[in-house]
Amino acid sequence: MADRKLDHLANLIRAKRKEIGMTQVTLAKYSGVSERYIVMLEGRKRKGMSVQTLNRVLQCLDIKWAELDML
Image 1 (cartoon, rainbow, N blue to C red):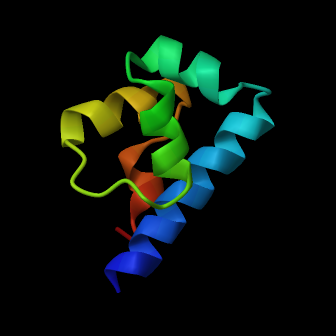
Image 2: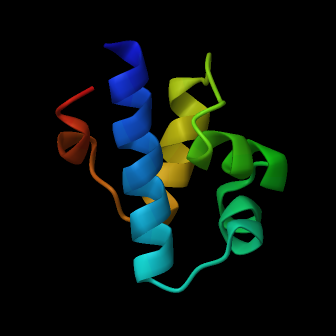
C-alpha cells in the first residue's frame, strides 16, 4: 500500500513539473531542496521525507494537499 502511495506522489509531482515546463534543477532551486531530493522523490526512492520539505515542493508546483487524497 505504501508503495502505491509513493508512486502516486511521484507521478503527480513529475506530471505537474513537466506540465509547467519546469526542470528538476529549477524545482529544487525554488523549493529550497537539493536536486538529488527531487530526483529521488520522482524516482520513488525518497522515503522518510518531512512534511515541511514536501510542502515546499508542492507549493512550487501549486499542488494542494487535497490532490493527495490517496495518501
